[in-house]
Image (cartoon, rainbow over all chains, first blue to last red; front, side, top):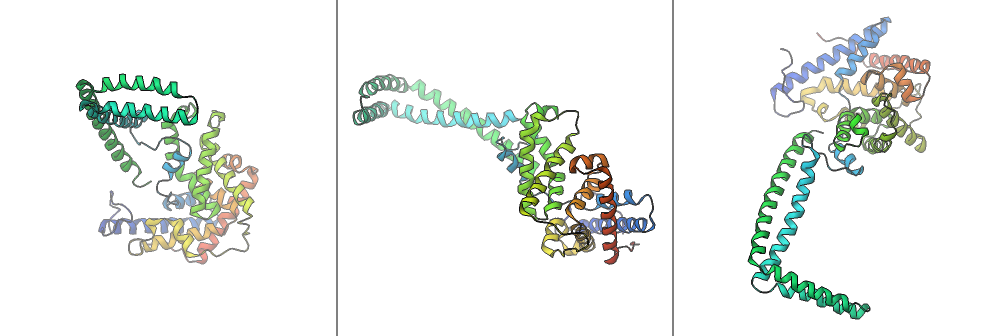
Length: 194
Length: 186
């Protein structure tokens, strides 16, 4: 039988190269054990290095899959990101947040553009007034909110606001999807066998 | 190392990835239960993360981390009053534990039967040892630590460490001889 073939993965089913390599590894381990036992029996000074050789060829217990990620999560640290720096992970989240905000504003602005956003602002203020009357003297707060809502709805009614929100949504979507794809790719490559 | 002490998350990750195998290996040898070992290894890493700011840079990081892992496992064993099997009365381990310790790549009977058998025999010979013997053997032969480092990690006098290693080696060798693994392949 020839020497071990590099590149074959242990335990990969259906691969002849795996069989060849595993058989060689098995023989190496067996020979290392026998050499150690022989030295141990005769009190040879090299018995200890021989046992080190046995341990080197004897695989250590496999760490459970995802162990590192679980420890990081328990430590309150962000999930593992492999070779990507942490700022990529943070900016990915930031992009996601911008995406949600921009999309929300876009919806409101769209409603405003067709002349309905005032309903939202005024409806919210009216709810505060209603609650204020029920819970105490918050009517003044409700009035202030109502005025602020009208100013805001005026701004949102502008087609420029809608265009701005649309651009922000598109940019944030691109950034979010791009960064998340990078992270998933990186993490799966790094932790596939962890 | 310096970065981790300074609080860099990336450096924490690197330390975790670098030491997860030896720390888990040490603990699983002690407690002989993969699920429990995972919990204790996680606890050990969390303790280490919290204590990193107090780590003295002149110490060897691996010894410091192994000491935390060792103490975590020993504390658990003491709490549970488990694992008091003396060397003279070996406990027989079931195949499930040995299989799980050997790892999935050793469980393919067609490709690695001999290796799997021998790995299981080695595992059994280690599992028969007392917990303190298993620890010193793992630290000495798997991690290649010096007697001084092992003494520091386990809190045992160096003479005791040497005695433990000597006795453990003899016990393992005798067991493997009994099982017929002294024959060298050709």
